[in-house]
Length: 334
Image (cartoon, rainbow, N blue to C red; front, side, top):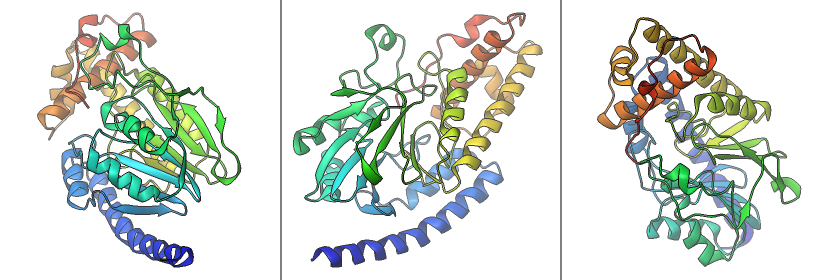
């Protein structure tokens, strides 16, 4: 196929994909507005998933969806191929040969200028080294977690990944239309990065903001104060399209970021009210506030409640909280 024919084919594919995704987004919005628990939305997303295929989402940006679905990450990890003749790979995904092969097929014969990891949960970073070996590209990320921090958690963390290039907040990479802005956005995870294409108005939000569900924030790696601050950071860049690492594209990023912030502040007020009534155990608070959760999501909700308790204690030192409530809470590896 000639280059021009390929461009026409991709444009046609993009138009078809847009129609399907638009219908899916409308259904997800309806479910969100009726407070359907996220397992239902996750199942909807999984039923419509197209694993291993190249899915255009914007001009010069395609997704390859990894087949690693979970109830709180939706259909799997989105790996993004970004650019024209030279490309970036964002969130390489899990250690899965079929996924790596699919990403390489999406790359085609183009040069890979860099492989960017949003954070080192294993469903995001493990494919970085296999892709590096096949492309010769350098890996980029905020940096590895220390052994002391890793010893505090039972989450599925990629302890082996160390980026070739450690990024700092506000660092610019590349030139021209596909220049990349690195954004350090801790809260969900200490080394979490978002990536922005400032000349395109496209934000890759990683796990920090998703369109179909709220994000898990679990101490000690998660921190609610940092999470809320990072929401402000992401809103400030003024993106017009947000591409998360799980789920569908978000066409109104500012609106979605504000919805997530409002939800978190509502939940924070609910947790504080429980504490004022003497309910200070995360599992008891989850029973008060949440319904329709799977066992994995119950554990995740307990972790989020613990993060809110930490924030209450930090904001109000007079609050008579038993600090054990925020300790020892972890979720199965994600």
